[in-house]
Image (cartoon, rainbow, N blue to C red; front, side):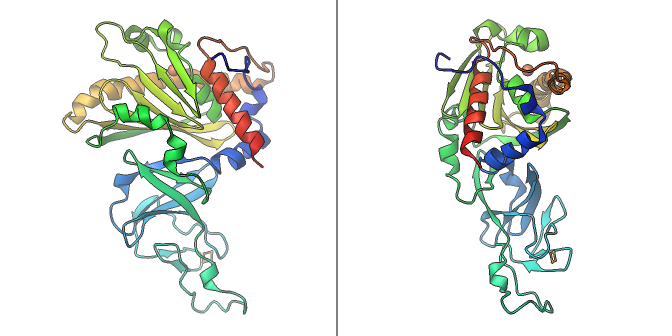
Length: 342
Ligand code: FES
Ligand SMILES: [Fe+2]
């Protein structure tokens, strides 16, 4: 906290300006690891899912040797998406526009009856690759094929997840919400416990929010808050730049991401994992209900904050040195990464 230079938020325009958003995509979402799916969605050769990172459509697919690969979902001919379905299985990837077909490893088969120019070589037209790695039952993608390894990005964040995650956990369910807010409006809210007594009545009954503490280091913030007597909430939360989060509200673990869809629009996705020996009903009526309640309480107020960030009256605000050090930390990281980019 002492090392924070920033005592005020970034300016309000950063939360809605189109050019600022474009620069974020180019310097952050084009270069940082993103959680994009679950390993259990891709079991056998040819299994695929499609999704997107910011405005980049991508494919995750199992190749013949059952390795998970990733590609931009863009045909090398005239830029159609090569897969339109959100999930499925295929023997080859066949572009729906003119029928070019690609092997599961992204190599283009020589298109017959194409009559390309003399210098056209199908071998130079494989799908554009992206980096894929898997951990905690999740699939992560990095649009930069020369990115650092996932473990290097996760760094010390893994140590905390490892304290809560078990390979025996099974997927419970996914929650997904489109929120009328910039992705950073949502992260800012996540990064402080200052609003707990006003916004989260049940959480406030379970934790001693005055003792909420956050350790900011490298590229992540580990949140801890002591629980009150009679509470079953250990209060363990963490965020890693730019938008990957874990929450523990008792048993199991919740992974969360805040997708930047447009400057004024984000998608909040939760995947809940529960211990194998806990029934779905038991988990849902406890931890599942808890996560949903906290999330809805945040979603109730975040669009109003976004409206005011856009309205032009508010420019910037002061940050608590005790409770909002992680908001300052996030803003500092953002500006630093963006200034290093294009
Ligand atoms: S755009 Fe894919 S085959 Fe033409
Ligand atoms: Fe909250």
